Amino acid sequence: MVPAACESAPPAQPENVLGGADLTQVGGCGDAFVWVTNSDSTIALTVNWAEAASRAQAGGRLQETAKLPDEQVTVAIQFGQHQSDGFCTDVLMTDHPRIVAEAPASSGEARSASSRHREQSPSCLSPPPA
Amino acid sequence: MPLATAGLTLRDLVFEVPVEGSFETWPIDSLDIREVQVGWLAG
Figure 1 (cartoon, rainbow over the protein chains, first blue to last red):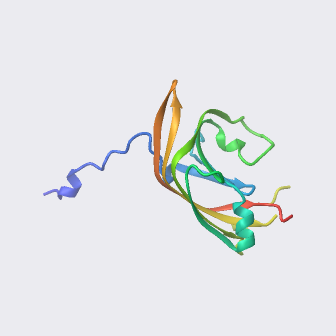
Figure 2 (figure 1 turned 90 degrees about the vertical axis):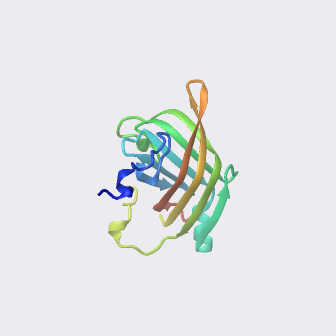
Figure 3 (figure 1 turned 120 degrees about the vertical axis):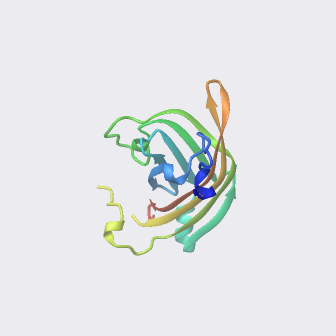
């Protein structure tokens, strides 16, 4: 006998819903801009949190929640190609990113848990710019 | 260049995405962005 839980299919996910597992490339720069893209770099999610890094440095950490839209916090989604190549660099060494459409988040919330740099082994850190 | 660790959690995000002349709602229920190393100038 098959347990009832095994007979039912998992709930269908709408095609237009992303989750953290879909966005596998991540990076950041500035004060503070963070980006994530899916594996083929056609969908990007960007977060620009004004002065998040410097405030975290000054206060040791930054734990705040912003209800969107917010003047200090911008969250946007972009559709295009080669998007990860265009973030946080002014030297494009590969295919040029192309943004087809972009939209800011019209509602939702963003929570920051930024903190001052913690001591980590060198292998955990990105190499400094040349 | 010093580094900060930026941990971000995004919840209940809704985007109004332009699609062929109209707009489509694009929800993202929850997304955690953790351990992103963000650099800034020490000044």
